[in-house]
Image (cartoon, rainbow, N blue to C red):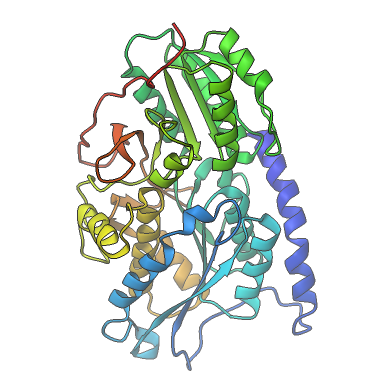
Length: 432
């Protein structure tokens, strides 16, 4: 964790140079605080930073759909009543593209605060692009709400006074991974690593290296590799020579597509493989090539089978998934759909409890959110984290869509039991 903290310290010192320059070239003042409050308020303005372009853009596929449905509900009767102004204020969202880049995330977040005067800054997806957003919020003392990032990595960029996160703890995610492995058929319990040197890769591999032996597994770790790696021969050879029945990793889709193809070319197919990030959607799995995705496992962020109802939309998880598929004609994007709905649920809970729109009032309202929604019952802990349980799912061929995700190990949801199935080995595995 010390290494991760140092990485974030360096990252944030670099990305904050951009907004510092922008601030210096602005109104000419030195005041680094902002306020969206005022007697002439006509709306509540939310600034949202996310990777709408670049290698992380697949995670934003459903944001506009969720935003439109959420704002339709929130603004149906004029918006949210704010006592200090004795009127309802409509809610507006200003989107900003981080371009999947930390420096750009910092730049656009700064613009939202300094130029657009947003009442709250929000952002989503991975610590590389969400942590800089929180850093800007802390700098200018603006309330901030981040959705979907590993809490451990994000917290390394703190401490936070103005920022809160709807996130998952890495230990919970890794526990779900290992729970899935425990349900496999006979195997030698040797687990090979396929983690890159990005923040997630470093965090996940460090956690698993500690947890797997405690659960009776042997770790084979060839080390971290850069995002620019295109030849995985050495890594694959090490895992194959060690006779690993299981491989766990974390990559973006283009990189994993290359790596998985080389696994096949070198005649090494493990009995089980769990890959984070790359195969979050059915379309991603299909993009690997014919039959290449069968039996692969990944983290499951949300699912239509969860027994919950959205506090904002008034729809069950099944109804939400069905609405997407009916309206869009494509498979529901389970990985991101739940997170975006939860973000708007928490925003709605926050502003409906605000008597005014002073930054400190909004911040305190975020901290006090304790509700039941699309992920069940959730609230913020002392670290400013609203912890969402993650499950593990396996991709299998589907009649309706090319692939369907089935939960094989459920997250620890409050007060409910989630139905699961046992995972199967990857068809055509080559290990003995």
